[in-house]
Length: 387
Image (cartoon, rainbow, N blue to C red; front, side, top):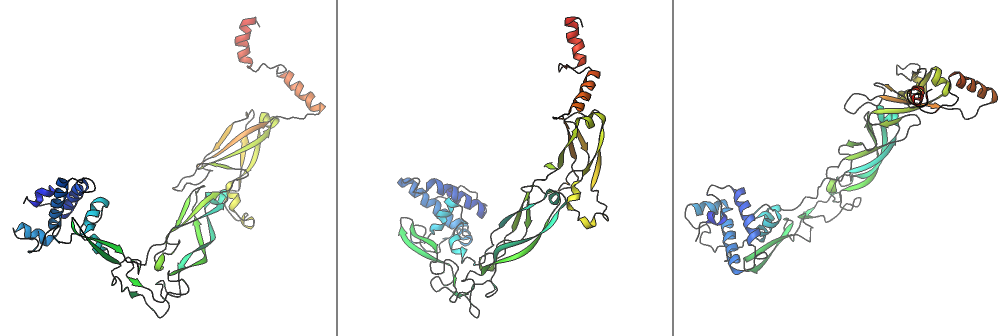
């Protein structure tokens, strides 16, 4: 018989993980479902036999000493009872030999699902932060049974079918020997216990639905799409398991004066043509004014407005940038306020106003403008036509 280490292609000092990886690699190549020819089947038996010995510390120690690793019992393919779980592990990444037998009953207690709610807040609240009370409808621990699902005065009992193991073995003969598969017990659904008297309040689930009120603190600088996480405020898990998280997704309502781009605020002001030409001063509110109560404005130090100087000759589309008057960032700092000036041209003039504008146009030699500007007119048309 060939050396078992050579059969798996591992050194004699290989650890358990290396032996497991070597077996999985060879099993995927040699399994009869992949290569059904007789030679490959025989090779697969040899590899499986080597793995059965080398993956068991006692059998491996006996083999290394030169003794019989099976203590005189039949080897693989001769009634050894090699678990079909080992073969399935090679294809599906299980934990190795005996993994099925070592799983045991699954717990009734599991973590709950995360929950998501959406709320709308004002731009100022998003910029400077706010606290909101929320009413949420989630699963909570059943107070009648304390989460274990059993009626008061009763307790879960071990399952008689699987004897508390949560799984039952099915054995059948094949060319590989005795193939043993483990399946979840149908009687207890894999829990290993049965609740003879389920709680009437939660029907044995260990949780009930309830509406409760939470306070969420929304930090300064959030924007549409930002999610605030409330740890362990989501759904309580089955069996009274730990709660998932609650996520509050922010939707920022449009503002009548300001719009937001990143941490910058943008505003548009409209000034008459005469004011743009002569210059003026505008009084504008700050975003902070939206979050200060009327009865506190006289006592607060928050700046509720500012003066914006419009210089004489300001053109439509001119931008004025006010540093540090935008939205605070989530990680510090603060954006800018960008004010765009739009010059409004009058559309209705009475006779006197029209007369005055014509006099102004005549005085400025703008009665018949060509759209090119005086400098360009003199430099181009002046040279062409001798003006």
